Amino acid sequence: MRIRSLGVIDDAVVELSPGFTAVTGETGAGKTMVVTSLGLLLGGRADAALVRIGAKSAVVEGRISVAPDSAAAVRAEDAGAELDDGALLVSRTISAEGRSRAYVGGRSVPAALLGELADDLVAVHGQTDQQGLLRPARQRAALDRYAGEAVAVPLAKYASAYRRLREVSTELDTLTTKARERAQEADLLRFGLNEIAAAEPLPGEDVELAAEAERLGHAEALASAASAAHSALAGDPEDPEGVDATTLVAGASRALESVRSHDPALAALADRLGEIGILLSDVAGELAGYADNLDADPRRLAAVEERRSVLAHLTRKYGEDISSVLAWAEQGSARLAELEGDDDRIEALTAERDALRAELGELAQALTDARTAAAERFATAVTAELAELAMPHARITVEIRQVEDPDGIEVGGRAVAFGASGADEVELHLAPHPGAPARPIAKGASGGELSRVMLAVEVVFAGSDPVPTYLFDEVDAGVGGKAAVEVGRRLARLARTAQVIVVTHLPQVAAFADRQLLVEKTNDGSVTRSGVRVLDGEDRVRELSRMLAGLEDSDTARAHAEELLETARAAR
Image (cartoon, rainbow, N blue to C red; front, side):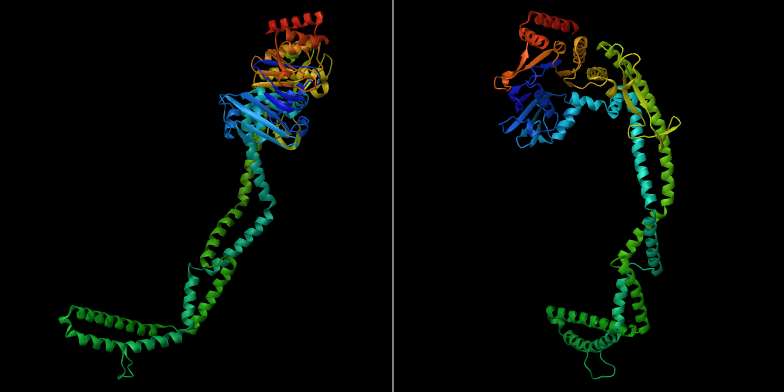
């Protein structure tokens, strides 16, 4: 990890090895900035106050090893990031104005994505993070993960039934609370469908009636025009001397008939005249029939207009034309059937809701049983760890309880409140010594005891669901003497299966580290590249001596430091 212009750090590189890494240094030397840098890479909140005075921006860059098929790698690749030889390159920039940018695998991403990746990569334990684990909801989640499949299987079934119950309850509420509105909608649909059914409109009927009304309204003019046209084509019986088109065409055809054999062109014209004569006769006959059959009855016109008025009433209310009216009626019938089926739907949903509540009660009981069994194992394991952390008489218990609620589900013969994770409330209790009442760990433990309880919980928890990296920020606060040695021993044990990074003031803890980093300032109060050093050999003895007695060259402190290192090596 490279840190530039962050707090007291000017430009420094921090190499975090596998196993147990202890970060030490004088108070105010910049150890907290190392933790802050890691927090920024893990999606922590950016603050312009973190930027070194005089700098335009602060930059933290890190290289995080990940398994190619891990959840973090898959999530990063989904965001467009690329792995670099099995590692994610992550960087975070904070400007002096407070703007923040995040990059993963060469791709700009929201800072929230870093937080998502962190959930699968690092478990952070500092003074504030510790408080988060004190919340009952977090403790229940931790117990569920510790229990494994025994809780995961019924919890998945419970969650599915719970989601369905929410859907059913929502639909029931909609059907019952909006019953009046739905009844009004049904009445309006029923009225409209009855109106349309009474009129019995036919597809295209409005178009046909409009054409008939136009014809009936001009019947006399149409009959007169047809008669005149017929007379022009076929002659007027009352005027024998009149000349008509049919007679003229017939005369023209006869004139050509005697000479058509002499010229094919003229013969073709004669044929066309014959066709014209036939066409004129046909048209004249149809005109005569049209005039004879034309209905000029005013009663029929009145009936047509009355029918058009009925159809116009429908089109004003239900559609642009009769085809649209019929389409509205089809859709309205389907909707009315749905609304009229509400009573049946309410009955079916009520039955399903009751069945789901009964099923949830059974699954919630199964969850309670599985959690109770896991809680006993968990409490026993944490109590054993506390005995090794100089709390031999402390006892951890896990209280699993339900809250009575008359509107809840029935579990164990009682109506209890329930939620997405079941009906259980889970809380860790600590009895620090015999005779002391077991109280919630937030209230029953001192600062040093709480640190050891959290470490014991994490050690036990890591055995069932390890994450690649654990970060402890002065989680050993308030601990000393033999307890501090056991804290170091437990951290070393945790480091057998994960990377452990610890910021500590305690030499008893630092001695158990596989690698010790020293953060130190230069004379001008900044931390530079040379300000974060890996301590080996004599340098590590000197630092442990300083941490023990404040004296780097004290023979007694050096002897004690060497003894601590030897004890730690033997334990590893």
